[in-house]
Amino acid sequence: MKTFRRIIRNPGPVKLARWATALHEAGHMVAYRELCRTWASGRVFGYGGTGGVSYHGTPQGDVFGDLVAVKCGEVAGGFAEWLPVPAGRPRRIRGALPPTPSDDVQIDRYIERLNREADRTYAPHISPLAVERAAALFVRDNLGDIIQIAERLFLSGRAFVPAPPKQKQGAASVSSAEFTRIAASAAKGN
Image 1 (spheres, rainbow, N blue to C red):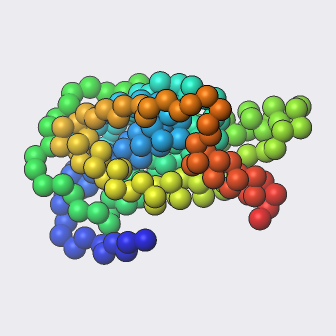
Image 2: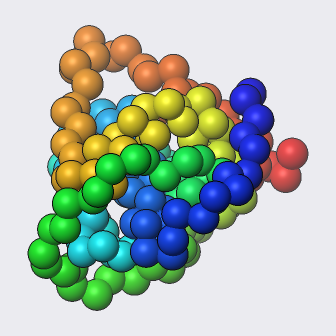
Image 3: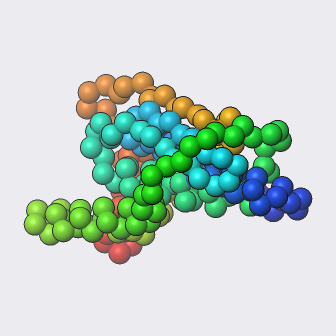
């Protein structure tokens, strides 16, 4: 894995906030494309740090992949201080998003609901640690794509990621299988 040196020059708090938001939203977008096999569209509003992602629901019903996609935003946004801010003047997009709960609140609510369901059906429980581990691995493996999309988001304020080609019926995604294995091992306490 590459190591990153902390950037010495200070790009300014507004540009840094926008860059962190662009990385955060790009993390969601790449994860939705790769884990949930669906398209995603992202925006970064104003010059500061507000943004959002629209995506088509998870077609395969991969609950764990959906949870990891939500967590990938936070993990990718954490690289803002370590990656250079793109050169150029960002385009300002007017607008705002309705207030929504933070990613962590959404994940906690979803896991709580799924684990209540699991108690009734004897399904394995999902732990927040498993979601966090899987998100960190995913961002590490896909950082190049995330940076590329984040640069588009930072400069233009908008980006679109198309859905990948459909898999053959019955073919499982390698990454989904890997994340399911991580979830099972974390649930057992390994």
